[in-house]
Length: 314
Image (cartoon, rainbow, N blue to C red):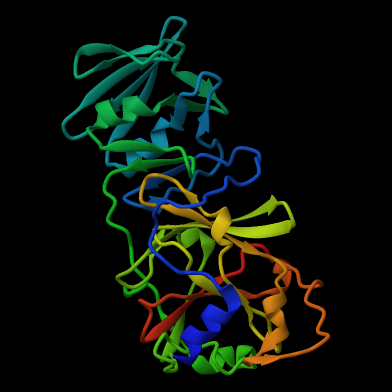
């Protein structure tokens, strides 16, 4: 109950599931890099990256995607024409660089944008991946993500995410409540994750999609895309009190896809509350996100262990 009370003091806001309300859009920022996720895990591309062309078509490097899905890619020349073949278990695709159409299982289909060679990689429209490899493909315009395959999110409960013993976090225990669950019971350990592990489900609850740093009126904010509205975070700084942050209610953005954007300010007068005591005259305005080593999620679904993400903004 003490931890719950602290959260209320820090925010003076209602933590609720995503719904309608007074919603504000974040300030415009440059387009993010297009990411490809295979069964909710981000694919790594060693050189040429996916992109969105001038007419809005999402283009992906076909070789890496095909091979990840168990298909083979072949290359050949017919005179001046460069040919690319793709062979999966149940599908066959024949393509020609520079053309907008391809033969999918012997049937000609036009994709409205050219198959191109860029950085020595063959890029094809996203829809060709879907039809040519028989995969479910979705374009996520919020995250600029290409979803291929299923959406069975990994969970921090999975064995691949190991529990770190609490003694390893002793330098962050100046705030005596920081590693307590919603019942005010101490965690048995902490699972440390990285931004590259996202999207990820916290235990059996909400899914954290991404963390970004954005600028809004008033300074820097951490933007967290999640399936839940208003989860409190704690910024962990070695040998200092934790910096508790609740989302700014009137800045919340409902994406309309069961996710929303929560915004957390860099500076907050709530830092004057240290171990639940008000420190008069404490200057909270000098704190920078880069000072934190970890960002701890204070989520109700986390009971036995806590989840801390290595600060990607350090």
